Each structure stands twice: as C-alpha cells, then as structure tokens.
Length: 375
Figure 1 (cartoon, rainbow, N blue to C red):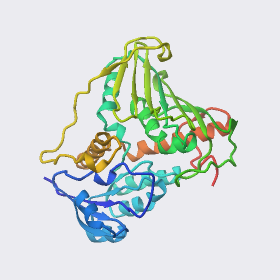
Figure 2 (cartoon, rainbow, N blue to C red):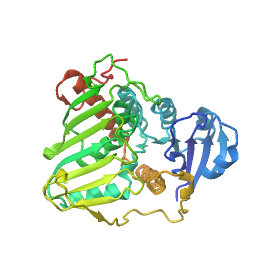
Figure 3 (cartoon, rainbow, N blue to C red):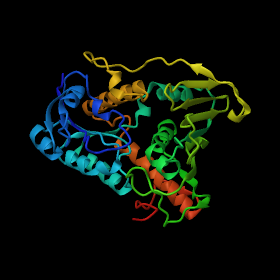
C-alpha cells in the first residue's frame, strides 16, 4: 500500500468570505501523512489537530523543499492565490488538489495545463458537484433515459449581492462545470451582460466583494449550445436572493425534468410530466443510492468541522475528490475534475463576456485567450 505525503497550504491570515473545507480533504484517509503551511502561528495547535498535520511551515517553498510531498492541496478560495503555488508544486513534481476557481486568468490556466503535461502530474480542481451523489445520480438518470432525450439545462447562480459577473465567477463556475460534466464542451455561446440595464462595454468594471479578477455586470444571461442539440442557459441577476435558494440546475427532457437546488438538503427531484417546467409540473423526491466506495481503514468524517454550511455535501465531496485524485495518480489517468475541465469552465466565462461585448455568438475554443474586458 502506497504511503502518501500531502502538503496542505491553508493560510488563515488570508481572510475571505469562507472556505469549503478543502484543507480537510485528505483528513482521515489511510496511509496519508499531512503537513500544514499556514503563515498564521496564532492558536496553531487546534488547526493542526483538526487537519491531522504532523508538522507546520509558514512558507510553502520551504515545505516543498523539506518534505517533497506527493500532493499539494491549495486551499484558498481566492483564484489569485493559486498560480504561484501550483507552479512551484508542479516544478517540484507534486500532484495538486486546488480549490475552485482554478485561476482568474485563462492564460494562466493554459500555462498550468501545460505544466501538468510537462511534469506528468495530475491536477484536480474542487468542483465538488462531480463527486456529489446527487449530481452523479442526475448524470446517470439522463444517460439512462429517465427524462427522455435531454433538451435544455437551466442553471442559476446564487443571485445575492454578488449577482451578475461576480456571481458567475464565484458560484456560476460550479454551474458551468456541471453543464460540461453532463453534456461535454459547448460549441458556442451567445450572451447578454448588463449593468443597470445597459449592455456592458469593454471599459466597464463592477466592484467585487473579493479579489476575483476582472468583472463586469449586475445581470448575466448566457445561452450555450452543446452536442446533440442540448441548450444550456445560465442566468444571474443581482439582489434576487431573498432567504430562498435560487442557485441550482434543472434539466428538461422530452419525457420529464430533474432539478436540484443548492440549499441545505440538495435533494434530487423528478417530474415525469412532458410539459415545460413553468406549467406547474409536479415533482417527486428521488432517493439516492450510494455508489461511491471508501478505501479500507478510512476514518469517519467529523461533520462539525464544516460549520453551518451543508456539511455532508462539502465534506463528502472533498473526501471523494482526494480519493479520486490518488486513484488517478496510481492509474495514470486524469481525475474526474481535471485542470482541463476547470479551464473549460473559465473559458466559458470569458466567452460570455466576449459574446456580450461583440453582440454575436462566440465559438469554442476561444481563439483569443486574454480577458475580453482587457487588462
């Protein structure tokens, strides 16, 4: 049995709106030794114990040189924190698990993909829906014909105070990655991004609550075309969230529809009505059957570590993302959510801006890799 050493880069001096528990992804897995990189030395012992880390560093470069880990877990949820750590880890021949979004720059994403190929390493990105039982079931039901031939997938961001461009980058990346998980890479996008009900221009910048790169618009509407005639519609409008979760997807087919909201329960619902969903289709709950397996010796998860957020979703998703990455390394294949998959999600966001600015459909892959909003 292989012994794994994992370097967890989780800087608690870096304040953000919250984390998704990526730093706990490998905790409790058998034959895994972890070390922690955190510039914050205050009250360190509880964080070390929570992760199960045996040693502590304040600099990831020192950790890479001293520990020579098999895997580096990049845990900041801010995309601007990722590139330098990923580059250093890749050049040290370390595999990587990275919080989403991978980066804010498509050019950096391309470089990371090239680094992964050059050093023959695996990079997994924490788009946890690909590992969640509810969305694995959605994919199986679509492929099994439960809703007939798929026609359209509808996706919404959280639509809170970040609605529009920021929502598309922070939360919409989950939805766009789900689109590709279910239906592959889109052929093209046609979109309309607006601020205060006027189309954005290349000079527009919308302030964001966190540093997430270039952003514009308080309203996003985007239509993607996928193989087989499947349409994908993504929308986010600022200020629609009123204590009721709007974020999620609905997949409509010729014989029914399935829907999941990103609420606390994240239940899967099915309607066998062939009517459009706005015609008061009646949904029924779908029971999920566990099809994921844990390695022998895996310790139970402590869901209390995840706080008030949907603990099982994040804790289970992170754990299976870590397991999948280790299996991908051993089997010399790409993980379920690879660096290439994450790059496509970012490319879709760039495509939304490009289409809105050009007022026409934009095909994938994008010929221009710089940000449509400029520098």
